[in-house]
Amino acid sequence: DLVVLCAPVQMLVAHCEQVASKFPDALITDAGSTKRSLVQGIESNVSPARFVGSHPLAGSDKSGVEHSRANLFEERTVIVTPTEKTAARDLHETHQFWRAIGAQTIEMAPDAHDAALAMTSHVPHVVAAALASATPAKHLPLIAGGWRDTTRIAAADVELWRQILQDNRQHVLNQLKLVRKNIEAFETALCDDDQDLLVRLLAEGKQRRDALGN
Image 1 (cartoon, rainbow, N blue to C red):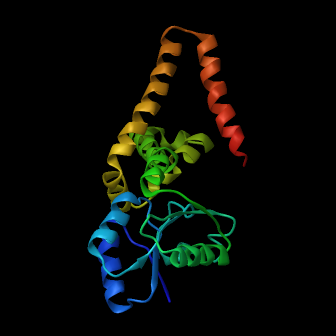
Image 2: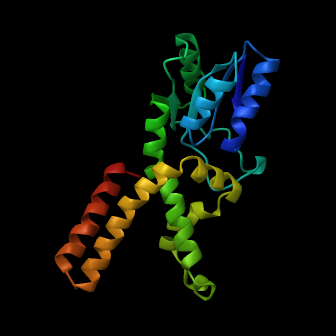
Image 3: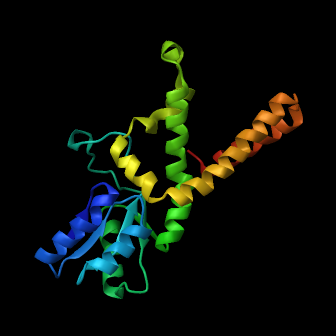
């Protein structure tokens, strides 16, 4: 009745094609972190397929069944990405599935999803990896909570993230420009010993983070 594709994003179209050929009446969704190329690939190359894209905002830097949790999706957001080709019945059943296992669902167009997740998920991974790799090994015994919190996601599967970043590279590049602009502002404040600017930049970051809650 329902198949959820969970694999690196560049494998999902082929997996959907395999499932649709064996179970043509099954509803198919996925857990991939990018959506535009996946949805386009399935709608262009896989027919017939009852496919509705999904992206559960859950999980961690850990991989493998030994890190599975029965309550993984409880009170977590799942983004569902229908298109004009999506049947109303399939969209409804996809929402029902995720809600039945405790999630809350929202809808976004595939490209809007990729643009937003570039900043909220993909760029954070780049920043975490950059900070982790820039830290000399001799300093690792001096690390405390701040470095650990900031770099945790850098420990995630490398090949999985290579595919995500490659698939969403233009949106990631666009959002990296915004991050670079803020870093340059911090550099300016420090170079000029501009305490007012430094306070404003720190306060803006704190305000945005505080708005999220715990």
